[in-house]
Length: 339
Image (tube, rainbow, N blue to C red; front, side, top):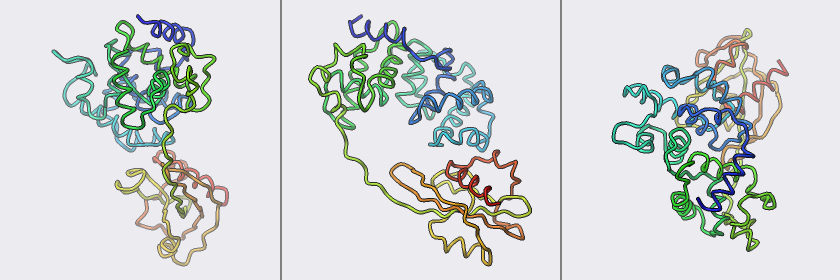
């Protein structure tokens, strides 16, 4: 074991956060946690993970779920494709009769078995294989990539940096404690080796860090050019009729496809044509971001005297049963204030 292994694992043993998915070796629970943690902060994920595991405690329970239910349970986490991938993977596993979920098949390593599951890529497979099955395989996420770039003072960018990080991770995975080693690297990146102002004075790996030695820690990873911001405007009209609210399902080829929304259009004239003769009441506005898009959302309440047959009408108390994107839930709360 190298001095870096020794230092980092000792630090992890003493300082790791007490997270619910670290209290188990259940590969299903680890799979769920890793999917939820993609592009989402740990503090946000914890209550979602706990609710998910109560509702779907096993792979068989998840495989029996319908998409609207999983999207409703996922709402607020964003990037809903992740939930669909979990469902598709669970169904595939059950359909193929692998009741010992994610256990390596005969003549297969854990990593090979995991990569055969739809929706599980190299990173997630590495996490499950090393943590649940103690297989000596690497993983690289954004945290590990950043730790690598600073330890080696690698000035590569994007694809080349990721490729080099995987090569380094494979060469340095701990043979006896691969799961703890991989988690230690991720924990270091999340809590100490942060993107901005890393806490080098507290870092157990600072004596091994070339970027720190050279004063380059704030230059690694090499900053990439920001993507141009796109400004959009959305008008949301919340229809209400006899105490019920009108929803429509979002097309699969749009943002939040398969979820539900109140009528939303970039041009207000489209909504005026859909609801002629109505007097919408302004409920306010807010800003929302999706990738590099900055959206100004204007919300109005529209009182109708007859149900629009093109909409699905839902009582107020049943709205939480429908998977609404975050901006739609904000729009609904604004509309309630003027109801």
